[in-house]
Image 1 (spheres, rainbow, N blue to C red):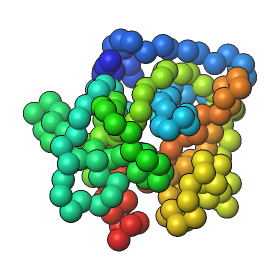
Image 2: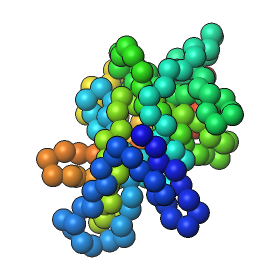
Image 3: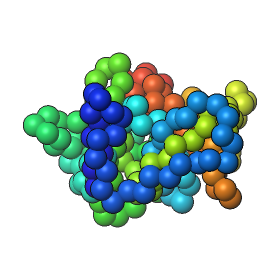
Image 4: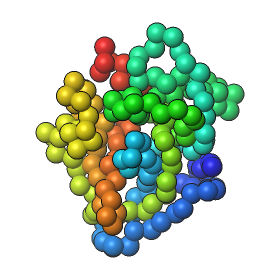
Amino acid sequence: MSIQRNPASDVERTSGINITRNSESGKGESIEICSFTVAGSVFALPIRHIVEIVGKVHPQPVPLSPFFIAGLVYYRGNVLTALSLRRLLDVKDCEGSHELLVLECIHGSFGLLVDSVEDLLVVSSADYEAIPGNSDGRFLGILDTQRMRIRGLFAGSYKQGERLLITLNTDELDPMRLAETFA
């Protein structure tokens, strides 16, 4: 499964992923997002931050690294730091391989491990709801000790039929920023 960006269009090639257009609202700007699951919850990121969906990977552990670092992944001749969203959410790691999203941030590219990539969706900005500033992750069952530190990870949500897509703040996923947060 792979998505690669092309300067001429946001999505050049998709394989194995459904592309769904949400026509419920019809108002607001159209935004492309990628939805994925972690521990049964559905999350999303704007496509503009995703360089590629690599698919199944097995990161190599890094001794003495922060808890949220799952390891290193070889990617197109480079080595990427792979973050574990499960660990950030204080959810038990699952056995086996994970799918890797390669993301861009100010400090460069990094990988985000998720359980599975679901869909590419086109949603309306009118359907977006920001998560209130006092939200602390309780809706995900996150432990009290982690709530305050990861509050910034959640940007907002989109309602898709009966499910809620929780959007993540890509800037807060930056490994350098996370290292400062958990120092």
